[in-house]
Image (cartoon, rainbow, N blue to C red; front, side):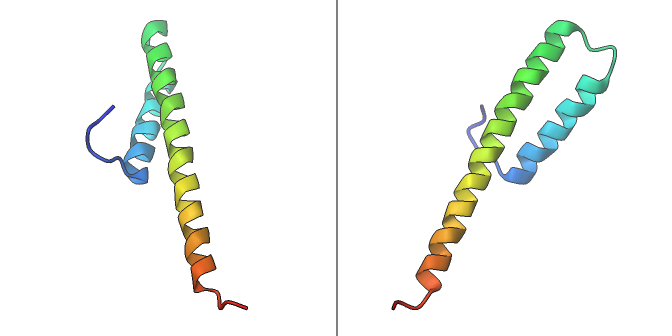
Length: 68
């Protein structure tokens, strides 16, 4: 895990790289397993990132609505 804050585009780019590597027939099973685990972890973190963004947008929208 990196010490800098990962952005969605950075995580997406790494996931794309992993997919390309997994499609390469010359990757041995041990490396493929490690890549798959890294990819699964990235997908989980990307989902968390999107959920956080969605919750932030919902809060902003609620705050922008006039009170009744």
